[in-house]
Amino acid sequence: MAKAQPNWANVAESYEAWYRTPPGKKYDALEKDLIAGLLGPVRGGRLLDIGCGTGHFTRWFRELGWEVWGLDLEERMLVRARELSGNGIFYCRGEAEKLPFADKSFPVSAMITTLESTAHPEMALAEAMRVSRERVVLGVLNSLSPLALSRRIRAIFRPTIFSQTRFYSAPVLCAMIRRVARQAGVPVSLRVAPWGRGPVRRIPLGAFYAVAVELKKRTGLAG
Image (cartoon, rainbow, N blue to C red; front, side, top):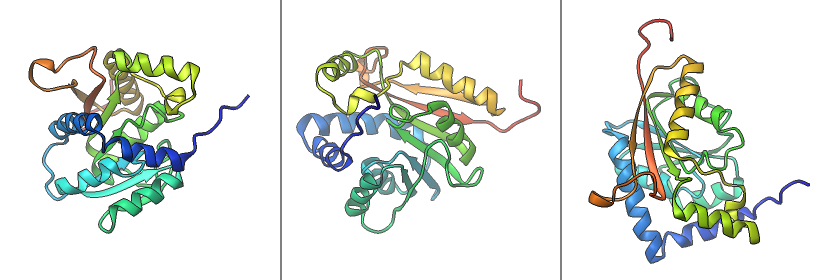
């Protein structure tokens, strides 16, 4: 039996509403703190937000000074993103596994909790590397966190958006990134930023972490 598809209109509204709650504001600040540390200098460059959803992070990237493009497969999410964003951000519908852009079109691409719901995560990673010149920044829900465990348990008894969500530990994700990069012949280095600030910055138990995939120039045949 095919799994029921989420009501994307309801998902769009609840997603934005959660970020307006006290916990949502707190976690939003923590997540953005990690991601900002890995983005690198703006330099007036373009950034592709893959799996942008309602544009929550897309709008923030624009506030940081990037020329931002947002891409998502779900049209209802894009409708809400356009409503909230106004002018100055370019949104388009498309698949993370088959991006409608030429090689190295963007200095930086971002995937914030995108791999968790993508049908073919390795293909999506390969595409993000293909269209990026400098780095790919990932924001990821940690499979080893108590929050991820509670979400999976609740989803067993009552279907939620997390019923079809993958969670990744940092070692598993980093191994997948290196495998995809090796298959694509792209040398990479990885930087992992764990959840929290100061002494509470931790892995493996933090609910969220970020990874910067630094794309190096080829110096010869890939090993």
